[in-house]
Length: 236
Image (cartoon, rainbow, N blue to C red; front, top):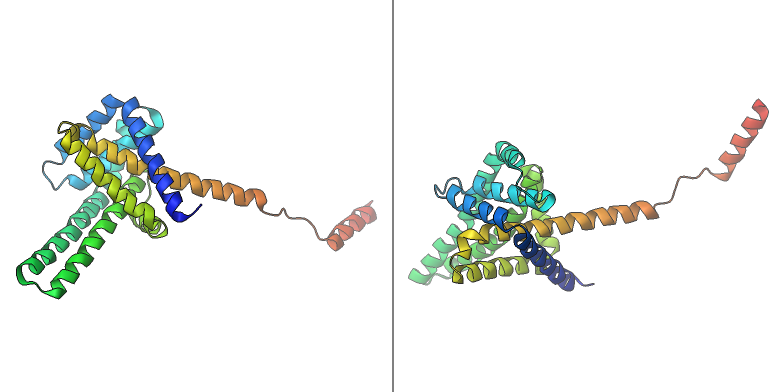
């Protein structure tokens, strides 16, 4: 299957699984979404609040309920990394808006180019850091979380574009439904990204299992086998 087809199918499966999670656990998912909205009001807490959402969604996916102890442990260990991630996620769009504003005001070609580059970096960074949040919630360290997210986006360019499109579409749909924006959108998007990361982990595990099953077993060379048989006979 081509990367384009594989990426499309993977994103579709992740979206369906995320919607199913919200459908089967509506109370928990609404509680997670409302908690994120309230925790993000100071703005400076946006990163830790987002990390808490991914951790809570992961516990609902795996256990069927919100594991508060796991969420507290994740926040205790990674709140500073989450704060840094959120700062970078804001910095790239701010850079893009700044240069595009300069381009609109002055018509400078350089400002226009820098604005488009900033927009691309912002888009790419949002996908990478979304997956990095998932990895932090799973207990990975910050460096591995970011590098794995970057590698995923580079190896799956079509899926990377689709992730952004689907996330933006969910935002528009929930905004049109008004009440769904604070009650559903945060948990639904976190579930979507979590399912994407879970698919990648499953694929790696399947590939490792397949490699193990096809690896040749260690067998003694015929000469070595004869020497062993002779030694055993001589000792007798």
